[in-house]
Length: 253
Image (cartoon, rainbow, N blue to C red):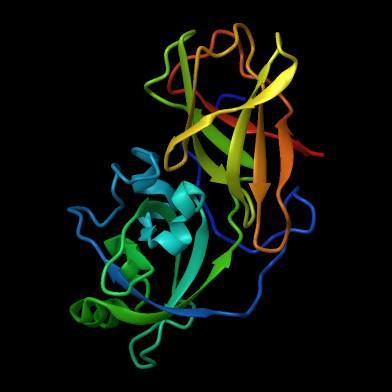
């Protein structure tokens, strides 16, 4: 189904259509967080995940760059985290919920957030301004499930794609606490799945894709489960165009 991105993104702990999803543990890891500057407080549309404008506005602009540990060579793109600072008189109990859209490291940080995300660490506006003056904060964090209006995987045909010679997608969203590790395309003539190349971030590409409809399958993994494959329920139409966005209901096997 071709979608418009006038959808609201929310972060909650729920059970999606993946098996055995809920991993809402109370364990928090210790780290440090800082923030980068933007003119409007939102994210960076040129983030290393390749999300473009979506990476600026997703989760109402509460986004973050992460360290190599969480970046996972692009596999961490789109992951959702709860981050809390540790100054009781200033820090909000629930902290901030962020979506990974970029790669970046600072002074022993795992998170460099947008201004909007960083401001939510504070208990109120005054506290948030005081926290910003610290520049870098000690924090604790945990990964939390992402949800996007009931969809499991959302991806967009990359703007550089050209039908029929070059095909690329941006994996914008994966439900739950899953990472996409591999994307494969079905080659009808060879009767086999062939891996697409991870170009950078969450962008996968393939030169000379098959003519006609395109079928994709995704290898996904989580912290609590081994890798397994899910296959698109609906193929991409033969007349695909760059910029089209798809919400794919997936079948595990």
